[in-house]
Length: 263
Image (cartoon, rainbow, N blue to C red; front, side):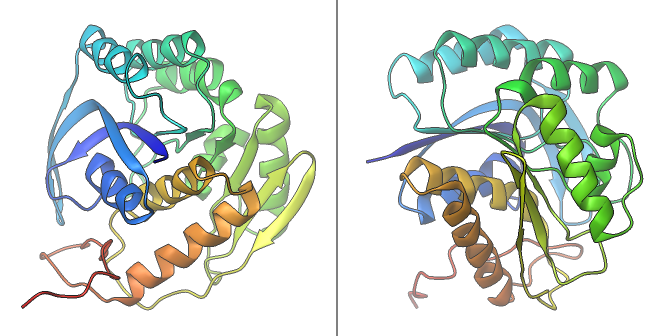
């Protein structure tokens, strides 16, 4: 059985973070493992508290995983501290981890910046250059590329800049733009568009986490990057189309839409 590791924060309401990652990986038929970077107290209406994991304990988690069940792919999500980023980079280098996907959780849906400048610099220096794929949304790509993104041409320029600067493939997600959820892949100097229909569902909590985890799962199973992205986007569309409606705010998707309801 293929395996995948998520290194991310915990979401107590289960819609994003490691909970969404594990659900997604499981639904893709891979064995999911996790290393927790932070605990959050949150629900569909917002985050009321964050408690970072001690860097030494994060190192113990990662050592336990890599020395026993080696992951075929690694997804990295919320990592807010400089020391945590450094620990992750050290372990990934030490064990020659493969199929590394970095989902740079830098900006909240509200527009608030989640990473301090020093942490952004460490992320750029330590993790992005070792990533096989980076999956920023538009606000995050604006930070990484240092430019405003308003059009599809801007998306192409930003993805090329990020990919060239950090030596990685880039999937720039278009969901924050007024398009039909079209995503742009910059790979080896070439640009490919992945078109998607915008699902009229206000409950989109955890879509970024889910997409990157789905891509990681498909890479772990041996699919090419392009096919992995296509399959991941299809999974997201079906999860949104299931129209799960939970909570009083921005609710989660139905990750297990394909499981028959047992009444």
